[in-house]
Image (cartoon, rainbow, N blue to C red; front, side, top):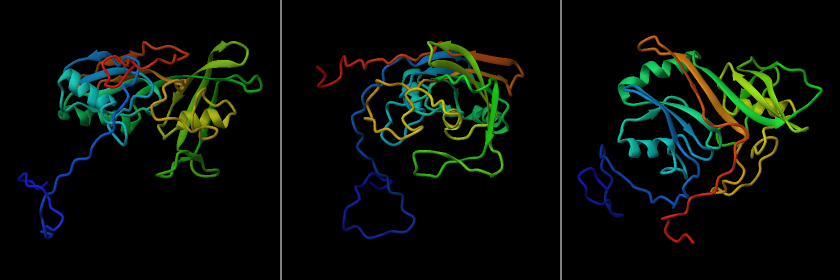
Length: 261
């Protein structure tokens, strides 16, 4: 429709400098199971602990089932925005700005790499690898492709410290991951490159076809800690996820969903 509310008709002539608004119908989105917990809230920031399969921001086929849309509605904060992102299938801590006036100072922290992030991952254990170890290489992600790739010989742009935190049975381990950079799929690619791909990863080592609303195999990757010096008041801040490894699969709550059995 036009800016004044009139519908745009098929035979309308083209008019320069005219605003046209459009609306697309959204698909029904299966409610993502698991709780979206508020870990911290003050007048400037909110820290939440998100479940796997919940998108950080509304995009593509995930609009209502996103952290931003859920929280703007439930907390009554129309200007709420994320300061960084997690993959939809990754669990754990997200930092958000309550309103636009606070976005700048906190986003600068991520741009300058002063936020200390710690992850946990469940992956195979290899006795022939010596830990702790640091993986350093160049990662490139081509727009439109599912997987990122390591570019041999290119300048280093991705670095991760990897430590074994505990053993799980004879074949698995929980790894403590400390990324010193933030490339797309960095942790998943670095573990896969060592021959220890993260359990339930649908992209590495190979792309696995999964239904968009299949919540049965959560990626065993958790953004478990965030720490930084507050850019506004200088206080030391540290937040820890309430989730633990391994991350359990949860069934959707179909109560009240039209057509549910």
